[in-house]
Image (cartoon, rainbow, N blue to C red; front, top):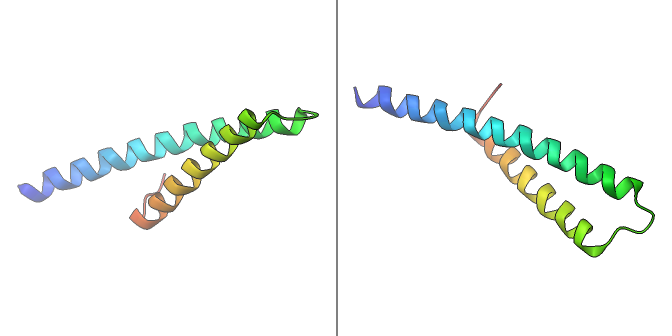
Length: 70
């Protein structure tokens, strides 16, 4: 009985992790597009790009470690 609840919570969190990864991937692509189209990107835009990139790669590593698949 206890293991069923644990499996349910794990699958629920895996789904949440995948949704967050998809959202961050989209945000990362948007920020990269802004930087690419900018002649002289501001430091704020570059900082935001680095923050989103770091979050995305961290969650991607976590998903790989957990063995999460779509």
